[in-house]
Image 1 (cartoon, rainbow, N blue to C red):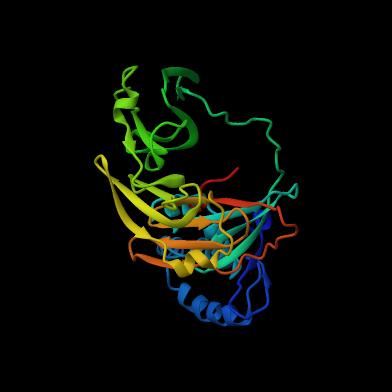
Image 2: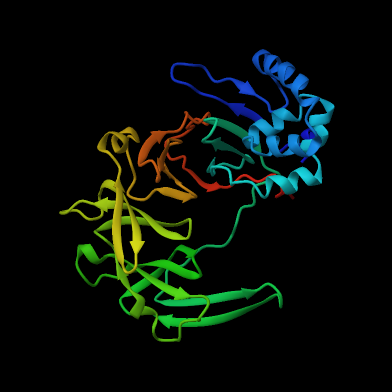
Length: 337
């Protein structure tokens, strides 16, 4: 990824009570230049392979900056060998990409290490004509990448339940949420079923894997964190299960849900008006939670059991019904178009 064709245009670093500042990976401020000047004298005694290993452990954004220090560093960070080295170091903290319901091909990526937003211009935004229809029938189609063919491995009728679009693969098992079509009590509106992709669960046995939701949920979001199934769910009120009163995080331990965190009320209130459904995704040790109605982003660190807000996203809400959403991803230099 050469610096001239970087997919990142601008960086935003919003601290409290500060104005938004635009910054580019290719720009180095005075402080950075002073640090670089001291580093250049040191790098003269370092062989290329050692310097490559040191630079490979920098955050992604800092690697782009390193390529602007001198010609040698630029050649290193854009070399094939360097890309190979970065693919074998510990993974970066997952970033979060936020975008809005707009025809403008632009979004914003958040780096949790440097706590900065980066504006990203996309080649285009395709308007899809596809939609996901809820159905009593559930079919599983598996793609064979070697034969380049699809195979329908299972079709089953879910009596009293309908399938949705919330699913994730974790340790060789496909998990997906299903929704009650009206039967059962308010605590039994959501459920989880699973399909073993290795052993190919036989027909007619899918509902035998049914696991009820831990409580009455307004919505649920599934994610794979280090091959462990995590669910982030909106907790419904006891008398009005369709009205959200809080957000919980659960880990599936065997066939039992284990609550690992519940969003403190001050953070829940910090979203302002929170919809009964929301966006949430995660990987590694971080979980991102975002309201559809505002560009507000909350982060939960599973290891540290810590909640914290991201820096304020530079995107602004232009009209009342404007929607925001996003997803997390692991930034990798070796992945390119």
